[in-house]
Length: 191
Image (cartoon, rainbow, N blue to C red; front, side, top):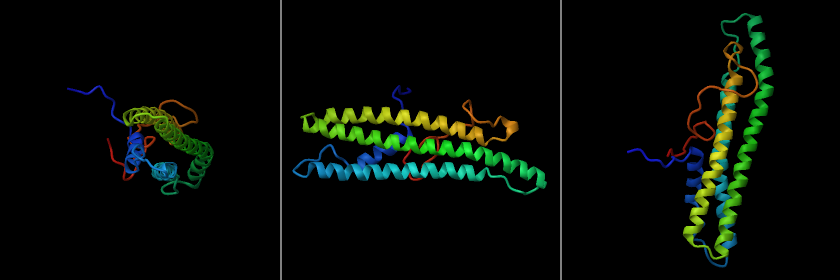
């Protein structure tokens, strides 16, 4: 019997694993704020590491599409390099966009962690905080995944040869695999 519960995205898994390695819901005591801040920084560092790996994978993909002179006339090679350099301008913008998605996710994670800790200070139960955090994590990671997958499709479309429909803009692109933003993340546990 199939489950109706959606499986978490890889992005969500990365975020949850980072949060689980640095639990904050049970922190108490006079150094509460300091301990929460330290845990938040460790969580964000782990997420950033995964996001940086994702961006590096995208850059590697772009580099792999750079034309080579092999089996081409000088004219063919020059045309391909001209197109690639034109596309590179567009692709650079897409990579910057991915970087802004990464920063947005980090801000959103920070916000819901802070909200969770404020809930504790106002007397919320551990279960209420856990549920709040899970909902916020899923919402933020789903938004991130959709934006990143769309960007990945646009990037792949831009990297296609002109004859295969490669031009700037949206539309359907190549397939998108699992991973953070459609790029597999090394060392990330899959759901």
